[in-house]
Amino acid sequence: MTESTATSTVEPILEVTGLVKHFPLTQGILFKKQVGAVRAVDGVDFTLAPGETLGIVGESGCGKSTVAKMLVNLERPTAGSIKYKGEDITKLSGRALKAVRRNIQMVFQDPYTSLNPRMTVGDIIGEPYDIHPEVAPKGDRRRRVQELLDVVGLNPEYVNRYPHQFSGGQRQRIGIARGLALRPEIIVADEPVSALDVSVQAQVINLLERLQGEFGLSYVFIAHDLSIVRHISDRVGVMYLGRIVEIGRDAEIYDHPTHPYTQALLSAVPVPDPEAREHRERIILVGDVPSPTNIPSGCRFRTRCWKAREKCEREVPALAVPAEFRHGAGPAAHASACHFAEEKQVVPPEESLDDQAEGAV
Ligand SMILES: Nc1ncnc2c1ncn2[C@@H]1O[C@H](COP(=O)(O)OP(=O)(O)O)[C@@H](O)[C@H]1O
Ligand code: SF4
Ligand SMILES: [Mg+2]
Image (tube, rainbow, N blue to C red; front, side):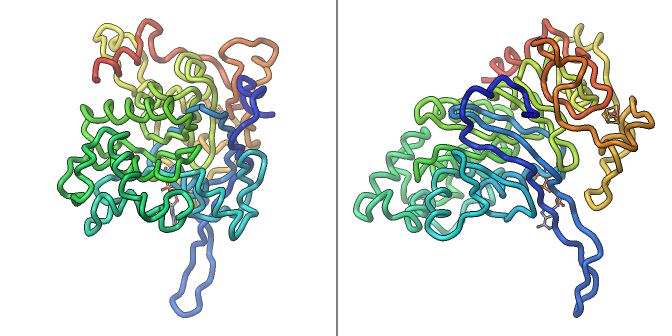
């Protein structure tokens, strides 16, 4: 077990091990020759407990959406396993795969482009029943769809309207209703509020939290912003260039981060109190994120890390509880892929990001 032991007593509903997705880079038009690979996801491990929310955070291009797509079988992994209740779903096909897919649904990032503009809301939400008619017999579909509209806080009478007749927040509610249609156990939400106004973001997050309680859902909640996932996540994994570099319970990650990348991301999170803002340290990362076609040797973060030493170039740091924290059960004892992991408080403790999020409701 390389991850935090906090959830190790509960049988995970999802267990991802060594997940890899490489896209071939080809040259030539007629005779395509592979000249390299985009290492979009390059060895991701995590578990998800029943009823839990795992936040996955990282800058644009670090591989979050590719992980999401593999979880719902929209992309086939190059390597690794995805176990749902102990069974590797990457090995399944036909009816067995279809049955499992029903239980893992996705909510997409952009409610403006993910809904077919020529379909009515009723047809969009009810479309999954075409593939799984056993969930809702034809004569029962309209009622089911109206129920789903009601569940996500929309008027059931809107069933014959088209997506353009709704606001962004309402469209995301439609996307969520569609995700719920097959009564899944797991929802993979890929930046579900990133395209929405700040004032609407909190409403959609509150809706997702309510639905989680109502339907006993487990969430993988993806975001590029650490402040958004704190409110909803039990645990958070921080991704950099195709890998998770630090993972732990939310208080471990926000109040006791040990990986320099997490510390840098946290130092950029908005802090409402002007005095606290003045006293905290901003960590400015040098350079750009390297290309996933050309990942640095050793620690992939080393080209931007202010602590990098010779060892970082030679040895890949494992995602594990760092040796110096292993003896204790303190908050620093969570998995961090850094040879020189150290605790560093970045966000002042009296600053509660939760208060900030609640203020936005
Ligand atoms: N189908 C594809 N073919 C080639 N490269 C891809 C494909 N999909 C994603 N990528 C690349 O993989 C990397 C990770 O992309 P993505 O998973 O979308 O990241 P994120 O969601 O974190 O922004 C990016 O460099 C992206 O350009
Ligand atoms: S292993 Fe080295 S380069 Fe990587 S995060 Fe730690 S100190 Fe920085
Ligand atoms: Mg994405």
